[in-house]
Each structure stands twice: as structure tokens, then as C-alpha cells.
Length: 264
Image (cartoon, rainbow, N blue to C red; front, side, top):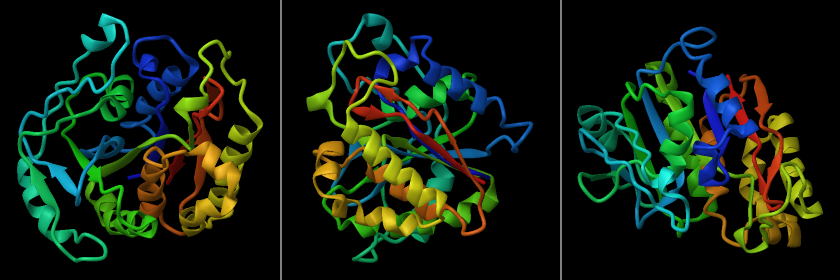
């Protein structure tokens, strides 16, 4: 299976006919033709931050509306994909939390599928018939640990698991401009997004771990880096001989880069 990193941007992309949503739909349609249909989707979303790492282990994960101030139509959205409890029980023992070697925790009731997950999956796989499991992010661990855990996920690609990470290569809510047209962006938005693309294009995925060496550009691109960390999981799960393909190479609200990546 390929590995995907998807820039999800505003939750409104789920219900509006944006060019980003249209590309999600187009790429989703490639599964079953260009690529096999996934047996399971393992999603790493910027919106599930925990202490330690956890996997959703419930049979029917709920749709979480983890946002505010949006139209009721967005809160009405549901994504009733099944979970995969038996798979999670096995995988939680196979994976080891970087730094301490502990097994993954299993969440049976607290979480579900947040908008970083279902907001992308609903346009891609509208039938909601593929089991979905979310993997949380321990934000307080060293940045290199996230890439290392992504490397552990690589093995599941051969088992029909689609690893899909959802965040943004640039994400600064403090600087966003609601009136900005699509693809208008700050210079630092473009600069950092292009730095990310250059590392990936060169096959130097591990250099993404050192993004803070980009100094002020990195600080502006990610005042907090919760939306950057999912990229490290996807980059870690990529193989050295994968080909790289970009899509949605654009910008939203001036301070979000929507770049998405396929490694295959």
C-alpha cells in the first residue's frame, strides 16, 4: 500500500466544494484501480494528542466534532466506519513506544475519529466501509520519536493497511486571514512548505525531524507543531525506493499549506 500525508486545513473543506476536497475525492477513487482497496486505514491525526501513544480499540468509533464556531451542517457530519478491535489487540503488542519500549495503550471509549481523520476520509472513502483505527500523538516526546514510530508502521503496508497521516506542512492559526483567497500565502508559508517538499523530493525524509533548524521560518510555520508531527509518521513509514508524488500544492487562509504527499 502507499503511504499518504494529507494536508487537511479548515474543517469546512469537508462540506464545501474546494479544490482540495476535489483532489481528496479523486485520490480516493484510485484505490481499487491504481492501488488495492485498503483492508484497514491507520490514521494519525494532528488532533489526538495524548500522554503516551494510544490506538482506538472500539468496534464502532464515534465521529468527534472537535471544533467550534462552524455551521450546523459541519456538526451534522457522521463517518460510521467500523473499528478493528482484534487487529488493535495484536498490533498494540507488536509496536513499542520509542524511548521507553512500552506497548501501545488501547482506548476503548474516550476517543473515536476526529475531524483530522474523518474530514479527509469522508471525501476519499464516502462509503465508510473500511475499518479505521486512529493512532494518537504524544506531543511531549522527542521529535525524532515520531519518525521512529513511523518506521515501525512500515511493516503494515504489506498487510493491506493504508497509513494516512493528517496535518499540514504549515499551520499557524494566529496568522490566518479569513479573507485571503486560495493560494495567497505569506512568504514564510511558502518558504517552509517548499523546504519540506525539497527534503521529500531528495529522499531525505529523516531531515524533516530537524525542521526547527529553519529558525524563524519554522517558528512562524508552526507556533506549535502538532500539525507537523503527522508528517513524520508518514515519512518514517516510507521506503527508500518509494516514488514521491505531491498533490494539493496550494495554500489556504494564507497561513496553511495544503501540500499532500503519496509515497508508493
